[in-house]
Length: 232
Image 1 (cartoon, rainbow, N blue to C red):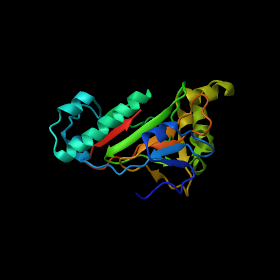
Image 2: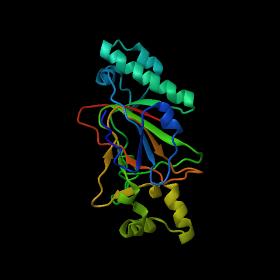
Image 3: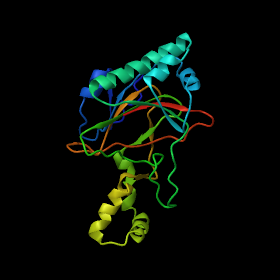
Image 4: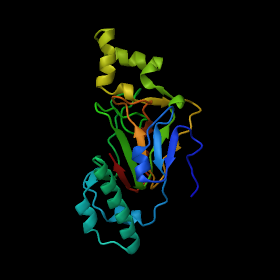
């Protein structure tokens, strides 16, 4: 299989789940990809699951109840195995059927929803794992191709106008409302699409993290198409 990501020094590429969880981030590398070309009909699974809300968490029981074709069953076995691998590793994976995420439309000068390039933050040492099985897939952006939005003068000025307390408390305000997690791509930035079927590990802003957190965003969904996404 052609390695699509090896020319990006920010991305490590591995061939097994064991390598994925045991390979450490280092230097500028803050994303690791278990690159896979999956077999099976994941669209069939997405079409037969019931969307109860815009984001519907799918249980193992929901998956097992589906009456699937041979190709659909192959896809189901892959998903079940991924859930098992991550759970045995100690993660808490969630399989989501997605119509869309909630939009943040409170301010016209800064967005804090997941469609905006952002990093994840955690008070405990952790990583983000994700895999898109069907539908539009997420993008990442290298850290040198993005500017933290709160450092852009016109955005910072408007945020300061919202905040009436002292300068010392301004930084706490930016963190409390997650403004500091969001990034603006530079004009020449080239987002990297994570593709279908690949299982990714992304660096999080967390204690003891030795690298910069990975900047990523949710994609705009394709018209009339749901997404099937594993994330933890």
